Image (cartoon, rainbow over all chains, first blue to last red; front, side):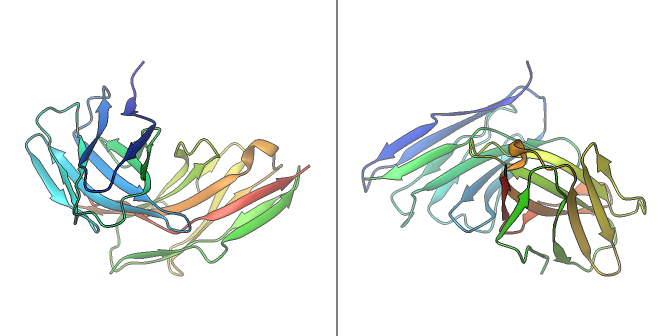
Length: 110
Length: 117
């Protein structure tokens, strides 16, 4: 089955630690995205990538980093510079107009 | 700046009744897409319906339909014969189309829909 997956589903981090969230897709889509969702907010764009080896900052990129070494993969690293990282993180991919979303990762900082 | 506004943080509907969720947007572009996404308690984002701005005909998908008013920049979602499984957060989203190159999705803050049995 074609789809987009994220792992892990739940992630706990101690303050001061970096952590990497995984996003993989086998839909052969060129573009991939990372969003952050907080209570009472819509989805806010962190980073996006239109092609391999290229990515752009979104609206709230500070404290995050990404890589796009393969078409299928777009991992997100939440660094210790992110002051309030506890949130729900969604990855998406697209080929034409609509985006397809993964199931999300809930990150909690202890 | 392009923005999407959902003015109803919460809505409630009786099972089998009809409900309309509101969405307005602000843009200077003429070519774009509009979407409604559903996010149930599982938090999986599911595409409900899509509208292309250059199409005057309102999109429909089974019990879901939209009222697209381009001049008014309004894009409401109507759910007919509401079912318990329709209970979810609903997000309106806008995406500009720059001559075939897609812009990024811009989301509203969502409307939480409750369905009463």
